[in-house]
Length: 289
Ligand SMILES: C[S@@+](CC[C@H](N)C(=O)[O-])C[C@H]1O[C@@H](n2cnc3c(N)ncnc32)[C@H](O)[C@@H]1O
Image 1 (cartoon, helix red, strand yellow):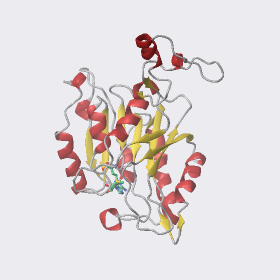
Image 2 (cartoon, rainbow, N blue to C red):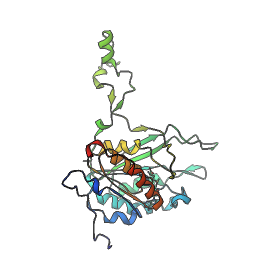
Image 3 (cartoon, protein in one colour):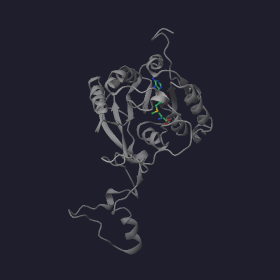
Image 4 (cartoon, rainbow, N blue to C red):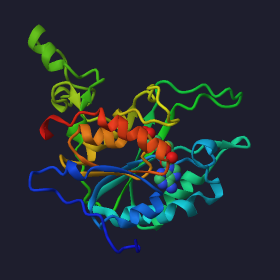
């Protein structure tokens, strides 16, 4: 197929959600992305291969070539993303010769130069980090998820990811009802209980969850909660979610479970098969049955 000759549209059938076109494909993201329509994706959530890692499993791009390798792919992602869309990039640099690599920082700056708006960075705080065996460094307990957008007008629904409050002010209303009046003002006289609706509050940009512990044939599986968090935060039902480095299919599975359309690309046919098997076991969200 000639590049740009036939673009794959994300067309919703008359019946509503276009789960019929949700699909996973084997292929190289660099070329596969070129057949997607402009402005057709609501959210990209992905974790590309990190530099110089897992060479046996899936290559291993040298750190000094990483930005050069990634920019043509991110240019395609920018083209296919809607103006209201977001791109969440999970990546963490490793260490080399006694110090942290710098390619991820260089990539973030290069993406800005490419025209992306660097909205924020989220920290994925892992509650079960691997021991490093390194004398000069502690266990690596976090990875970053960079949030980029095409415009300032991206979809964002913080109420969809409300979480239980750890604040000492939470529950004050309830306690007062049960036990009479209590002090609910802070040192500046602000009524803190009014700032907390129920016990559910908007979370911070630190997302705490363990690495996936499922035993499947892929070395870097997302915990499902991670793509789910971003899908809830940045999309609505039936929106289109893309993972160009889909691995074992976690982003697609999270999207399917939440009633979003999905498209997954994966270089390895073996991983593609794995993702297809996992997807087949994933029930559609209730609103799509
Ligand atoms: C870090 S893993 C993603 C894991 C995924 N988040 C999951 O939950 O399973 C990166 C994946 O990208 C795939 N990959 C590497 N280069 C690729 C390319 N050029 N195009 C598409 N997929 C690629 C690898 O085979 C690997 O499965």
